[in-house]
Image (tube, rainbow, N blue to C red):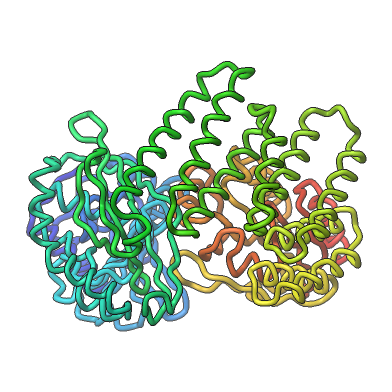
Length: 640
């Protein structure tokens, strides 16, 4: 890459910051590169090399660069969208590489965007118009952080948004660099504690932890001995816990992560680091503990569940968890006909763990995980006695734990259904009849449980699939009345709305990862395909490939696709889109299959397609991509 002296680069950066096109021309004339990259000669002479000379304020950002040869095949063009003006750099494939814009018509660049594989991954923002970045945002495959730099010195003063995974990355980086201030920016503070409005006892315990965090950080640096080359590999932890308002005097709900852990690579070897507890303060997750080496001898004492998870019981649970993990690793290397015996050991260990839990919620979570484990093992044909054993556990739970008993019954029904499908010894009609009868029996035996609501949703979906919308609507309406206020009722209400929308206009909008609103109303006049999807439902990109083909064939006729992603994490979505890039917009809101967009239209399982005609009315919906060809063709023919 061509090198310029520091003064030239300083002037170049000044030129782009000020956004002055005359200054750009004068500066460029003073020192013209020998090989002039492709530009639009009818526009102000800001070159690709000038644009590519700019770097993000924050370091270690994954962005695309252009070699001198690639610059020759790339273009830089003025950008204009209403009052937003600036410059955009595109490579030879047409993917955006850089975009520098003035968002508020003040004649100066105030937003510097950097891209990777056509997706924006990082943005510097000048929010006060003084030509200095004071906000830094990460997008798509780079994450979801949003940092604020109050004094504009390039160092983030506090986080506006940051996920647990990204907090753990900051913790590891702070230890590797020996930077206590970086650590304290993602650690709970006294100001955060006031916002949490905890009860007196928890407030006292957290306040004591906060007071010792700086000292504990220095001890962690000594204990962990991480080098600046240490790489963060993976974040691990059970699902977050919700502590309801009212418990122990807490004035509001708390979202807490317990006993989180991180896998890092240092000097070509992997090691695990205990991160401890995290609590969510607004849109920011904060650590409560300094990190510690992972060892059986060290156990964090949790301020959030001190009686239930501290001391000896937690040590026992950790030991059992490690034993279960060892058994799980054995399963893949055990001959298939002998795996049942290993699963028997796993089941006994999980029951033992549930019995040792002092907190009923943790005990129930162990049993729920047990039902999931057994169900999965059954339809993977690894656990021949699984269905019988699940029934035995259900019978034991019936008297005192009706919700759990119903859950074991439901997971057993699911496992039996998938097993019958894979074995293929019965006709599809017979398998379906058994499935329906089992679900109906569940409704009879456990009429008021969460599993009942889930089964009713499944029945409604079944009636939709066999083209009986009236019966489906009747089932969904029962869910909304019997389980009012529950997530199941929200899902069922959305399904009723969707069924009633056929032939009528549909109002639908959602948020992108960057926070912008995507409203299908803006596409009125075009045929719109709402595509509800998740990476786990299309692991090899088959659905996306079919949609790309459909889009290419009908783009000239005005077909627009809007993706609605149902992954639990935007990071998962972005990683998938790195491998399966698309050019249609993506709605993503937290909650996965239970997110607001999914519940709004009663979508239970991706993929799911809703086809909307050019007048904004719902024409059809389907879970099968091959149905769309004919449906789109009919709409186009109708509009001729």
